[in-house]
Length: 290
Image: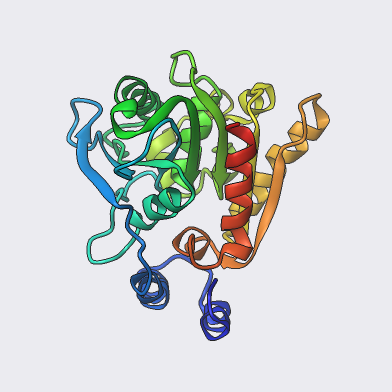
């Protein structure tokens, strides 16, 4: 758990995403992870799940792993940036270490970026990574029939697209999904350049591209999370989805606000502030992968 001094410092950080605030988040949280054994015992790097140079994944496991549930993490980056590892930092290798400590195998993946690759490329890349997992993850100690998808921000939008059927492939082996500060409907945020970079400028297509209806119809257990000090658009997206789910007949998802955290710190702090989110995530994975 974060020490009191660090948590106090976190509350002073600006919630908005700029190069300066990103650097400040790294400066605060990276050293804390560096004091821990944040890496999984074994990491297999840059395994291709497709032909594009961006279609690569890392597998985080342990020498004695066998038939463990698989946590798949899809990073954010506003649809136009981001990677499965951030050079010179523990991010996002720390997710693999967290997973290993909880008797999971983790897969962290990159995907093709906008504007070169537009909707539904992200959902298709998630589908291709899942297909790779079905074929190969048993070699690394994972169970291909117990997959938990976890996407943050734009990565959450890509996971949501896959769950909503936008990849055009059947969904098999997925036990549950975690959607953190994700975007579900491009229409309310169409003024953002990165949204248009991925979804395009044709607002008449936004209803087709929305994942709200598909997620309402999705029968998988879902954990939907935002940070207390998140981007306002993320709060609005999450409540829009929740409202649609409550209007329909879908089982109520696990829905939470991660206290004290920002859009960045909610994922950077996994393994540090377990009281805020990590413990709930571990319980969710455990009960959906029995």
